[in-house]
Length: 205
Image (cartoon, rainbow, N blue to C red; front, side):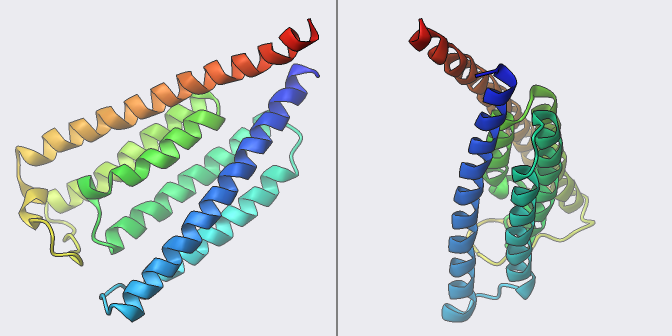
């Protein structure tokens, strides 16, 4: 099998599996939000449900766009745009849930790892950089008291978000984790691709 055809089939298969996992996770998340909103009476704004439904729709549209492409370069370009939009949606969701800043940092790890696993190094680094910016933006707005932090779950001290030693130190740690996660997933993905290319050659020999 030609290398270009092999790479095309590989990236399409990865994106298809990722879309199925994302759709399942979002549907479960939507069900939990509805349960918390109307079952447990938590003061969750309707904008959260709208954003999740919008996310599901965007994911489906981009999945269809990618499925019809025959160029790996075009697939990576389309899907890198999707990841940018996905992280923007995620940033708003975390804010409306009261999980902006360091508490919501872990949720950026998943798109960073996924993007660096299926996209090229250039696109992966772009996604990692944008994730850092989307993480820092609400943190700095809250730190300078431009934007107040939402507090739905009373399990943390909101004063931490304006604590001078805590904010820069925690932000540097989160940035290091983002960069490390992106770099290691990219390297590991490259190793897997090389092994996948060598396997058919070894079998034929």
